[in-house]
Amino acid sequence: MMKKYAPFFYFAACFFLMNSCAKPFDAPPANDTLTLNANTTIRQLKLLHVKNNFERITDDLIVSGIVIANDQSGNWYKQIIIQDETGGITVRMDGNNLFNNYPVGRKIAVKAKGLYLGDYGGVIQLGAGIDNSDPNNPSLIPLPTSLFDKYVLKGSLNNQVIPRLVNINTLSANLQDTLQSTLIQLADVEFAVNELDKTYADAVGKQAANLTIKNCSGNSIILRTSGYADFASNKIPAGNGNLVAVFAIFGTTKQLLIRDTSDVHFQNARCGNSTVSKISIAAVRNSYKGTAYTYQEDKFINGIVISDATAGNISENEVILQEDSNMPGILLQLNTGHGFKMGDSVTVQLNQAMLTKENNIL
Image (cartoon, rainbow, N blue to C red; front, top):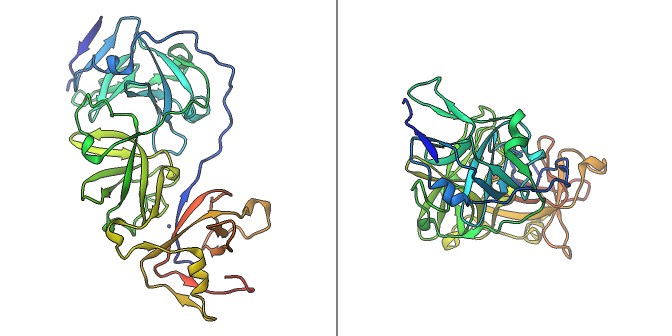
């Protein structure tokens, strides 16, 4: 049984880089095992919720799922998202660095008895109670740190959730859309052309940003990024490709959230082979004719970082990219230090960037 509660209601200073990297973290203990089996599904649990209400769960319900998103990059705050074969749900948890104990890929079980269901903008959540400090806008209270181990049991690590390949038109703003809070993939999509000079969010003012993702048929959806995300200041990529994200809604607005920029694989030519197009690093090198050259074309290159500034064998404001192991790479000169690591995939927008040779290095 459950009780319902109605509410009271940003080579040279001109380069723009996009980083696709996975941030390191301390490995959590791997010896935790689940001692409880799920007796209901996430889908069944979510069906107990009515929009704008709060429901206290009084039955001994247990759901199990795999963590698909957490607070590691800063794009989520005090919450993790878990997914089973039937759906996904947000679990509000009043702690920082949750990713240390609840990394993506960890299986967990949630003992739901005594917890509450609610929703934020239509995204169904689990929490510890109801905050009525604002009678006109009640909200879920996150689970206190002291109760984490009582309600959230840690299981095996490195489990995989394969993103479901969907079309933009498949997604809806329905409260009970089974894709809500799950990992999805969109193919052949890109940022709208008017967005291409932007960053993912406002890292200085710590303001979130909504950017438009479009497919080649003109259908669109919002990509929302927190100003606190560690990739907020990164320039968005100009190409086309695949996007992995967690699907959410806010009111009637369908939106996507990425874990970090490794979820964005925009390395192909844009829809209709528009003027913003990819060229090879080899082509960039071949275009050098002995004098400095500033690009005016809307082109971009992709490459993998093969340098390591932390080893001290390269300046902290330099990065070496290589597109193919059989071809020479190119050196990027930045205006500041950076966080790029060996193996990161990087996209460089060339418009207004200067190609030159220093110490016989392009």
